[in-house]
Length: 134
Image (cartoon, rainbow, N blue to C red; front, side, top):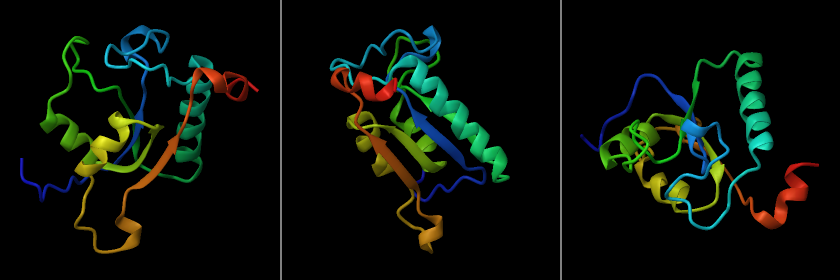
């Protein structure tokens, strides 16, 4: 894959630490510390993201990224992670290496500030559950 790869179709990438296969109730096997959004809160956030994309006539699709291949056993290849993060117009997710480490794949060759990827990073934890459910 060329480092100059720039996709035609952009996405809004939501990094989840929950396992997509299990309806966001079981932790991803690569998550060892517990910084996971409350499943109800995560569902609300995703619905709100989709609603706002429609409201503002945005064409991006929301794509969930949990770092795993479709077989749910293997960590996603670097090439797939590169293509996914390079395709993002916006990246949203919890603080950590799954988010921060993959930011290196975003496009460093933008011609304007409007072309830069937008990032929203938050810090969920077991201690913040009362904030997430309020």
